[in-house]
Image (cartoon, rainbow over all chains, first blue to last red):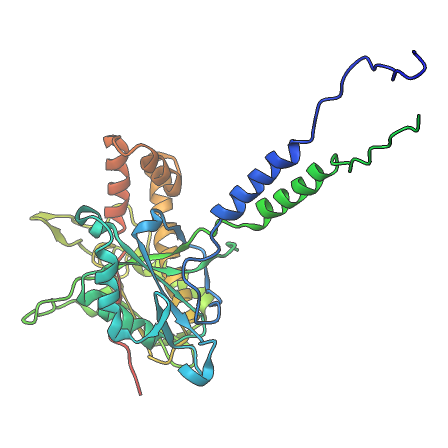
Length: 155
Length: 207
């Protein structure tokens, strides 16, 4: 009889079969929660200027972003570094007030004064475009702005 | 009595593979924090607004032309000298400060400038005016702004160390962590009031 019986081991090994499931669950969680970008860029990713005196932008929900740079679709929008993108459309400076008012409607009244407009402009774009945007922002009283820049190392 | 092989796939390494993927995603996903040079725009002036008359010596003029060259107070300058020149201008303290809510601030007691009569009276009167061309590159414009802010930061930092013994960014951070602390608030405001950041953007030139 004992010939056919398997030899019993002293300690049964811990069943690790469910370990991959746990890890996959974590993996999926991270894959789902990390959003790559809320709006897809119609512009080429602007190469931001660098500055040393940068401040971090807090409260992402209170930040509206205006992109300025070169269009990906040169045939449709024209060349040059002065295309403006609001939400996911190429627009002009004239559309900025509407964009700001629209983003204001998404937050509560009390938070409106803390709203910041982040201008992500390519370093090769022209000051004229930025100034046009700035004048429009002033018209709608969106006075807090942040010129997006990467942190440079102080030398 | 043939021995039954049960061909179970070894799932032991599955966990390793999944971990590898997990670590890959953890490392590659940057939570890209948006940072930038913050600026507060002035409000739109009413139509009948008459700008106050400001003495020429209290204005520090920075011009950037369309070829990204710098003209500071009528002279060509390299961008690396801008910070020190701006600091010398702000910190000059050649006269009396402005009258703040009926209280005259008097001469600048903390300034270490050369007190020249041809430069600014007081840090709270010193205005830096940046004029650029519409065709100026944005990168240059921002670099100029950065240099000017650096000048203010350096002065604030110096004063903060002198008065309270700690660098200004640290003072500001500790206030941010504890906003109810009135003593810290007073200190931060005192430094900010001593060297107010007055950088104005003049109407751009275009041609």
